[in-house]
Length: 171
Image (tube, rainbow, N blue to C red; front, side, top):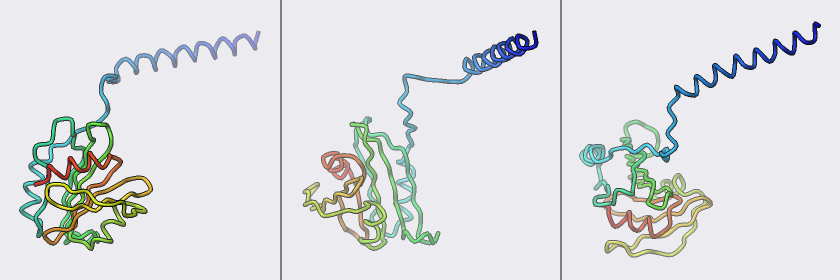
């Protein structure tokens, strides 16, 4: 008799826990149609950063809505993080890959080491009248150019073609 009570009690306890979990599941938001990408508005941040940066800060204009900004930041050198005056703008590309604009007045080699791990030269691309150096890293690729006292790196898992599209939009 004692053994049956233990099994019966265990089954009742499991049912009680199941009911609580089921009710909790009903009240939790779950949107199966979303892709989980949280977009950010970057135009105001870019305008503020352009006023603060000691170099001509570049931000894209005219990209399609399929380019979704996911991160944006500007950190002045005065914060002392060793990145110089650093501009970052990250995107999910139309193909679902990642691409970012990294711009800084930090030395070119230091910026490339921080943004393109294991980056090796991979030729050049002509975009918007500029010659951009191509780099292929262990997990990402990049286009880079030096101009106006700053180094600009377009990096991510996006293809060179998508990075070139981003470079074309920079103003």
